[in-house]
Length: 122
Image 1: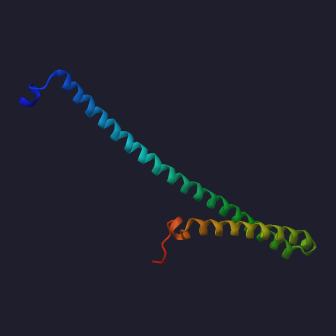
Image 2 (image 1 turned 45 degrees about the horizontal axis):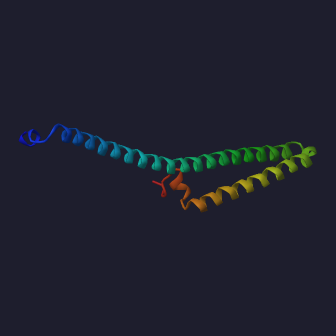
Image 3 (image 1 turned 180 degrees about the horizontal axis):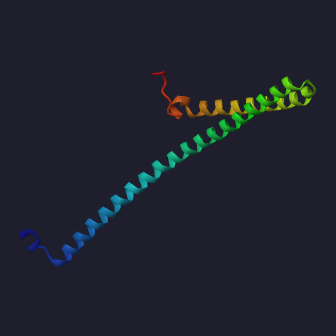
């Protein structure tokens, strides 16, 4: 306590202000680092959202193609219309598959890494 007794009041107040400023700077730097990390995670969430949306649309294309094949098998008179639906849906499916493949190539991650699936069956 002798050290504090020998320091003037103005120096004590200045020391307290300097300590508070250092703590404030540290809190600011930690917050900035956290926001930068969150920004990079937001990019990943956007990528996963795009993949999920494209996958759901691909699933709808498969359902439409399945129904068109069923219609062709059940009623041969609908062959022309059902084949047009089948061709259109298969074209959309292939376009969306190309988008998914391009996304995986750009992200440098395997689908198993993105979706958290094990790489080898257990």
